[in-house]
Image 1: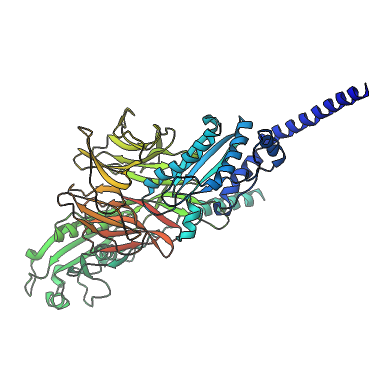
Image 2: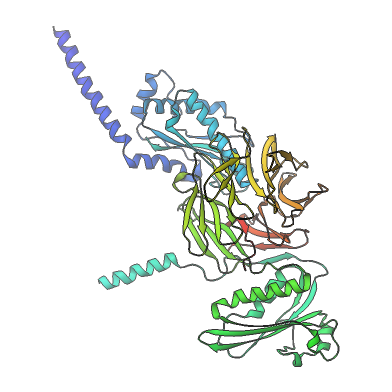
Length: 183
Length: 440
């Protein structure tokens, strides 16, 4: 049957495309440059710069497969109010999108950083920073991410986003950051 | 060509490892004591010009910067005696000095110097002084690179003689320098310098943060937290030979190391249970004893001088407050009540008072509290970001970091609040300081 033959051709062709896609995805996953780019995204630009994973095509496929939003997936910095470890509702879609990426990529591993503004005691700030990172980790886990994919580190006030001692700088300092150790 | 390349690469290596020979920190007395002890320090007679280190100038700076002396030094004196027979007491009476330091320095060969000094009581002196007026009279032979250390030692002797308190001029400071070059990653350096900021030596350089240096009671080792390899770990490093070993690298926080007074244990903060809690680790066996066990933030343990108590910071009542663990029973009691933010406690050397960070009117200040009366006194009055207080071994001064002209700098305040000193870094930011114990 023509239709059957067409279907078979389409199936084989589609498989090749899929395989190719998988292959390129696999290659990207272990491309150290991609990991470095991802990590550099928050190291440069004083921590306020966000950047994508440089393969949004694959990323969107994964997100769409779960029938969830694919927006804000590149947002990996979440800000907190003064003396608070409550994640803003506006950050939850981005955290869910990152959760979906991690679920779809079980080999992916993240370092979840917690940060505070520079005011007050350094070691107490280490404690506060850990609470912020844990709040994001809890949301990732609630979305189904395996705890083995998440490592938490609190830098407290030791890696400020901005060096100024103003309220606007402090707002950028109080954050949790997802850094991909392995994409 | 190869030779040229080699010499060129040596040049670059030298460029990278060269370290500023001058003081990293420069000491500025910002406020001294009214009614300080007036003392004249005559420039020491130098037999030849073979030394570039002027011992009497260092003594002058030490005593001046302690805030407890009014020093008449090189620029104030028109008469410069170097032996008792040359001292005209009338001149020093008119000047208003109570005491006089004179001395001599001469090269004795092989790069060594003989230094002698005398501390002379002027206020009780007659027209002609006799050996009765000589309070201290010492002589030393040292190598040229020991002259600074000797000068600090002489300052210690004079300070103790005239105030009754052991001097701290021979102690060291450990602190973290952060360099943030434009368009390059930050660099963190753990440094140790003399108490006056001279002779800075790097102990550890890292692209990742270093924090919470803590001196062992004998002053030979430093424990600190390093974030190298993106983990918080506690290391113990030998200050003299630079060798180090990993003490603690549990998952999560490894922080706030504090040596027990006998140097056999270290109190640490670990969050391996899920939240930061206070533990005491036996350094020899690495055995842990847990002292807090809850879901709050418990951190910054500090030993009492008698080893019976640990102070710590906890937010179990809301904001951070100071608590005390009785080690024998494990009982915990609250120590600070004033204000909604009190953190980073430490005892004075006699155990009668504690200092900590106290927030008042949005400003973080260094405060001291009497443990008997609970009376709290704020010692700092400049800036809003005073942090990381560390007590001098004689309990007279507190070292801390503060923001000055937009940069983190080290500063000192006396525990009576009357003397204030700033030690700005020449470059970069200096932070998270720890005052050494007596190093003898």
